[in-house]
Amino acid sequence: MAKTKDPGLGSKYDNEVKRLINEDGSYNIIRHGALRGIKDFYKFLIDISWNRFLLYSLLGYLIINALFALIYLVVGLDQISGLNTDSSDFFEAYFFSVQTLTSVGYGQMSPIGFGANLVATAESFIGLMSIALITGLLYGRFSKPSSKLKFTKNIIIAPFEDGKAVMFKMVNQRNSILLNSDVTTILNMDEGTGDGKFNKTYYQLKLQIDHVSFFPLTWTIVHKIDEKSPFHSMSLEDIKSRNAEVIVLIEAFDETHSQMVTERKSYGGDQWLDGMKFTKNFKTNSDGKIELFIGDLDSMIKVEE
Figure 1 (cartoon, rainbow, N blue to C red):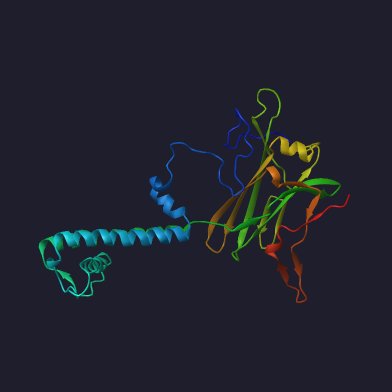
Figure 2 (figure 1 turned 90 degrees about the vertical axis):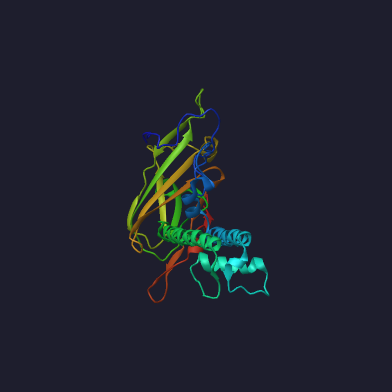
């Protein structure tokens, strides 16, 4: 199989690079000086987990109200009418801040002095901006294209036709309908000789099937090892010693959300297995319906010699 161009991951290295993309699809690259975390505020809040997003939103809400409560205390609670004198001054100022920030305004408490009105004006503006910001972030998080593809933990060398093939499997964990799914697999290996032994060589693997119109079941990706394959005449030890890594890119149209979704995956290192084969994880029941067992995706058996 002919070599392919560098897909954008670099090819010349001074030291050993075991894999370019991590198992979860993230890049195995440390980017110094890049925008990350709160420096890229919007992306940070879009990408973090829902638990962290809700926690940060709640903390921000509590802190803003606490800061304005302190400002009202400095201005003087005598400029706010309707306070409960039996309650703590801070909590009364805090609850007044909540009503102002959210524009609830029950009517029991209201600013009567110039200073309190000035602070309430600023807080109401911040409240409007905060609500708009949270609404935009929620929309961005819900509308962000995402897939829930599950891949086998291992990539295997298994018997296929009259020889062997490299295989892995994947399945859509959601009940959403994926159409016109395309898969691209790129192999990179160390050159392993001379001064450039750590340099990477890239190959685009030829697959038995690289496109399916419908994707309701398990999809087994198969690359036949023949004379044209870069794996030809390579043992499992050779594959591991040259840090062979298979990078997978999936693109599909999600009919439920009417948008394209993508997924990355990488196989390398100890994920390579030989002498194993996957078992079938779907069957037909007595009613003539197909039952798919997603939890059995990784089920394998040893190949008898």
